[in-house]
Image: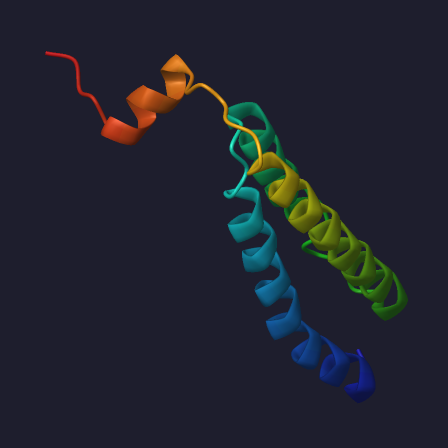
Length: 101
């Protein structure tokens, strides 16, 4: 790997981690359980799928796509927060950490 590629990756890694955390944080703001879990799962799967990417051009494209997805998630969570959803049974149990006796 050339020094420019390694320099690019060393500068990109903090940006990628920050973007990953922002996507997860934004995903958790969805009011609806199914939307929230889907967004979280999709974010994790997308980053895991491309974690070993070494091509700088592809990494750059993936980073830009993730930034676009963050913007979409931010708009969607804002819309989601305008509406009230009933809590699902799985949400109530997971929040309380109920342990059966």
